[in-house]
Length: 282
Image (cartoon, rainbow, N blue to C red; front, side, top):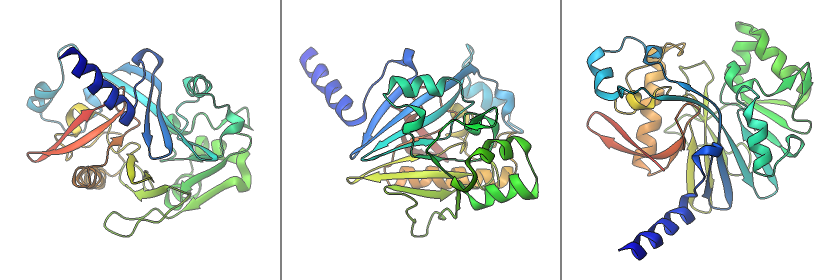
């Protein structure tokens, strides 16, 4: 039995990868792509971030001992290209990248899920771009809203040092043919949290993985109850629709998913469970 367990664990490691929780990095393989979830910050969780939640639901899913709220980023090493998905606050992300053998000037592309401070805080410091060679990609709706319609100075300042290296795009709608942005990366429109909030489907060698950004904020509750939104969601009804759609897509197509606010390891599989979904962390 012991020998069987060792073989089984080695098999799982070969498929998904393992990392010590202490280093805040979890690495998995998607074809030839190596994807590393990197914990940028951890804090005690607060169920009060949910909007209009029934206390009975909270008591059912929130442990008495509390829970961890995590802010994550993802590093994708693809053949010939290093891709960072969000930058967190710009704190631990640089140390985590160094541990993975990648320096800021080796980042070719930064994909942004949206323009909130905990996702773009690492783009610049004192007006200087921290990724000297990277192209920045953000959805057109997100860029328009935060730099023109409802100007957010933090977003403007984060993008300013990159000048014409900032690129906008139109993410695909679920249910339509997904369009490739860069090799192996397909942006998916997940509006609601912000107007242009975007997830990214990574595909290579017949394998797939979804980086869902802020499709949810409190996994313990919002997987089983995707209809519940966060107080951070600008359009709560639309956010709930986007969350349900991406979870249904992941479950139906057996695609693992990761998020920027899911506690370590930050990613796992999704299955339908009653009227909601069950998350099985790696």
